Amino acid sequence: MNLVIGLGNPETRYRYTRHNIGFMVLEEIAARWEVPLKQKSFNALWNRGKITGKNVLLAMPQTYMNLSGNSVRALLAFFKVDVANLIVIHDDLDLPFGKIRLKVGGGDAGHKGLKSIIASLGSADFMRVRMGIGKPSEKTPVEDYVLQKFNSDESALLEQIIQSASEATADIIKSGMQQAMAKYHTKNISI
Image 1 (tube, rainbow, N blue to C red):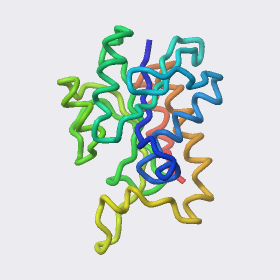
Image 2 (spheres, rainbow, N blue to C red; image 1 turned 90 degrees about the horizontal axis):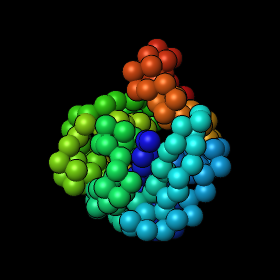
Image 3 (cartoon, rainbow, N blue to C red; image 1 turned 60 degrees about the vertical axis):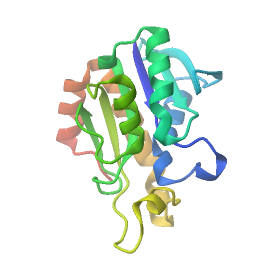
Image 4 (tube, one colour; image 1 turned 90 degrees about the vertical axis):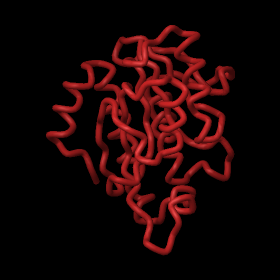
């Protein structure tokens, strides 16, 4: 079974910000595959279901981003999911807006949600769906930029990006990371 985590911040004021694109993708996956996120425990909204005929656990930690690891660790332990079967969907400043990259392992690249997960699990060997949000201008601090809402041009493309990321995640679950990477990196997913 895969545990699929979408990263974000729980308050309504953060709902459509760059840092919450992981939540947006997970909500799309939950809607598309009819796995309503109705369970509330482990500091998360979560539910079990099936994607492409395979058992999955979908979850959105309800801690703030920098404490996401507590929720992820509790879910992995309770449901006995191996860290190698963890998929984390998150925003990435190092990718241009609209670009999606799939990856296994690596560092946190300054992302506080990833840093928390790696510290809590004692491992970085999990799968990632990296969602490009671009970089701020030199005058905008990173902390402010990631908490900004998408501009109108970006918002017009957001639904298509979210759908592409949800399809890529489903392909990881169905075929494994290597096949999904071969498929999507060849296509060079981006808008």
